Length: 76
Image (cartoon, rainbow, N blue to C red):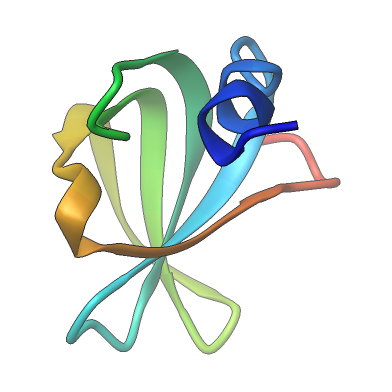
């Protein structure tokens, strides 16, 4: 399975995203992804060391700044 297809299979699920140059993780529901791996998240929250920092709401993440995308087991 191609990485793009794998990410598309996570649409509608809560994911954790790690970004380049950031110490915090972003957790939110994946609403959509395009061919450049840009992500559309809803109910996004920022966590640092497992502690919630702030609510971000609906956000778009640029694909070339993403390091890790993984399913998140706990619901937000």
